[in-house]
Image (cartoon, rainbow, N blue to C red; front, side, top):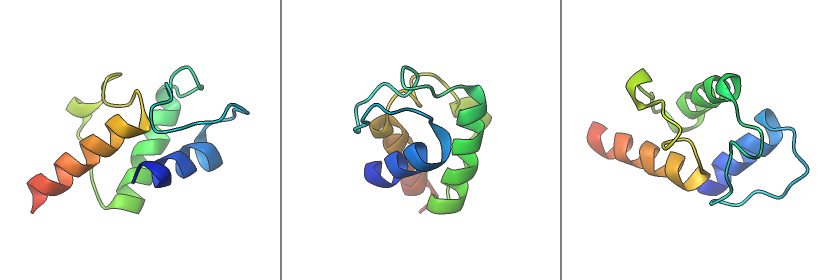
Length: 79
């Protein structure tokens, strides 16, 4: 899941030449509030998961690992 998220971030949202890995600081790489909104739409599309506005925090979106953890927890709760 982290690799898919990194692909979405690299290919669709971030304009950076820096290499990204699962623990890269996404805000340092250029993720901003508009990018988070676009990422939420991509998460809904690719992972069939809806992110609640109350879950929008710098902590939840700091790295691909943290985003994947959030998605997994939501998918587990839905089952």
